[in-house]
Amino acid sequence: MEDTDYKKRCAWANPKNELYIKYHDEEWGQPVYDDQKLFEMLLLESFQAGLTWECVLNKREAFRKAFDGFDLEKICAYDADKMEELRQDAGIIRNRLKIKAAVNNARVFKKIMEEYGSFSTYLWGYTKGQVVYEKDQVTSPLSDAISKDLKKRGMTFVGSTIIYAYLQAVGVIYSHEDECYLCRQEVRKTKDDKEETGACSD
Image (cartoon, helix red, strand yellow):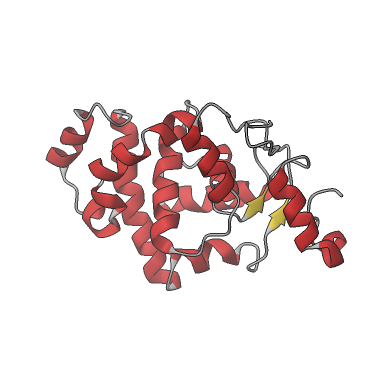
């Protein structure tokens, strides 16, 4: 996809949506280690099930306002009245099960933080801190394993497809397409060791 700035981007990046272009250029595929951001993205990804990421992204600021700035402690304390309030918020995706899952998943997320010291340590531990370079997939043994463990811990709306998209979003998996200008930058950055890292094709 080539935008008016003549940069070739991944085909999914809608050039007519400035939010989407900004997200593609500045966030998607960038390694994230901050638990607050990791939680925000996991919450948003859980609402994507059955919808498009663009739909969720367009409502991101409404979600931020509705969910107290994605404050983990506050969300963990949400009660039935608060969840019903969220169900009445026209700015977000008002799916009862997804709202319930967001609160439940926040509580599980917190327990993982307490167990590992941080959710980042837990997540990146699956790849020993390494970025995985792969494209054209929607699930993988990695997303299968993380999805299975999160479900075992009590999370919902964290199937392997959702988790794979999450891993791409937070940079554990790098999936920018070969012709994307960001992928070409990655090639130049890793040119000396690209065979080892599996970076984008030259």
